[in-house]
Image (cartoon, rainbow, N blue to C red; front, side, top):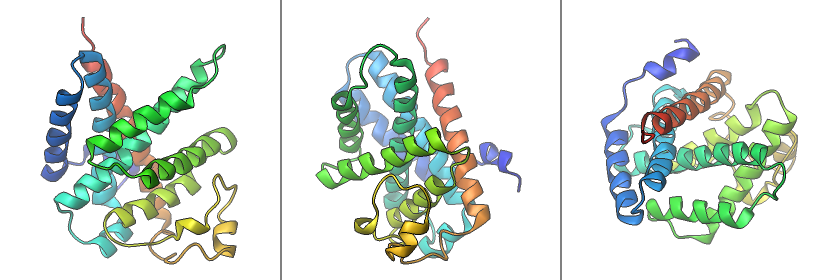
Length: 221
């Protein structure tokens, strides 16, 4: 299977069902159309990426088994937050004269977590760490290999299988060597597949494209 085929994968009905449920929550929270479109765009990208990773990452399938409602919800949340990170990067690039506003960003993070019925401070801190790594990778690397490894680990964890002891990880890191040295990686076999890493990287692009397409297609004329 080529990487470009990730866009052609049929969406698992459980991910579509998750989209409908979270969309209803978005309707209840936001009276204005533009806010609803923004968060549905993020959700569309998250759903698309979650579906591709769940369908194509062999290591994830082996340790997590079949996708159920709980796993679909957790994976969609994970990758919807990644779509928010990508949106932050676009905003940062546009903020040439004004300072990047962390408080505004944390508000958006909290909204998404609340949509998924997650009110924990730990989840906010977890997003901040992953967002810092995402920012670092885009700025300093011409690849997303390290981020892909982290996302694979997070996807496995969302499905009930732990691969990394996060308390031993300092963000952002420049290479995987510190994780190895600190023995943060507790299951390397599940997250070191070159093919799975490539799948995650291509799925990021697919998710971002789906997010952009939804936003553009639902622009009010």
